[in-house]
Length: 288
Ligand SMILES: NC(=O)c1ccc[n+]([C@@H]2O[C@H](COP(=O)([O-])OP(=O)(O)OC[C@H]3O[C@@H](n4cnc5c(N)ncnc54)[C@H](OP(=O)(O)O)[C@@H]3O)[C@@H](O)[C@H]2O)c1
Image 1 (cartoon, rainbow, N blue to C red):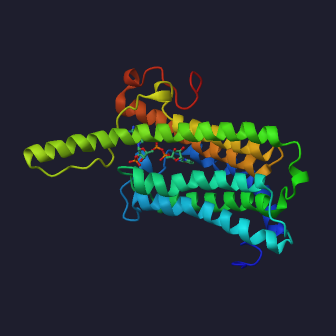
Image 2: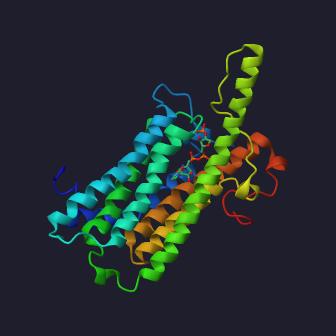
């Protein structure tokens, strides 16, 4: 079923144009170096337009994998690919889907104790990012990239290494996300015990921040970002160095998350003091 002719699933011309221009997204993120205004998470603001954090994360992150799966099923028949796509294409689509099931559903709706409200500006930017990114990736995976066993010939070793890198980095991302969650979970446990003892209402843990300490948090303040970059580097390896959409994905993420991590570092220093932050860097141990 064609939802939007030429776009969903994308025609070759649409895919080629979007995929070309998507490489230049880092230029757009130049804005993030010029302003500290980023109304989400630690730097969320009071605004009557704010959206509830957990649901906003779910709704802005989910369109990516839904679009990708939709294109994976609808594009090949339109292009006359009747034998089905090779397992390598489906493996990459599965990696992307697993990550975004975690990011869009499991983390915000099932695991995170609380998430700051999000301004529509950030919500719309993130939704647009995910839609564009998944259009580029799924176009490549569903028909405009490799579509036969021969196209993938000689790539097995790179896919194996890429899968290992991707898997460990996803675990690292989840581990460090969870270390942040544990700060609020443990505060909530203490509040519940106190409430039961003193017959008082639970205050809640919205916008409660402490210095995380475990794993790579000993060296950097945003190890979950670093792990996510390594994850998508592994994904790019799976697709091969000529996989332009996977390359753009990695560089585009770095370009938007790096200024966020550096500004986050300043936020930690302002809140907890240089002494408590110590030798920790923002995102790359010992360097940055
Ligand atoms: N931000 C991006 O541009 C971006 C892009 C792609 C992927 N991601 C991935 O999405 C995930 C979340 O990103 P994020 O930018 O929201 O990360 P974050 O600012 O570190 O926040 C992650 C979660 O932990 C809470 N939190 C953060 N620092 C805390 C602290 N010191 N003490 C207690 N709780 C704390 C946050 O609550 P609050 O919401 O209340 O602050 C939020 O629920 C990461 O794994 C990242 O790799 C982010």
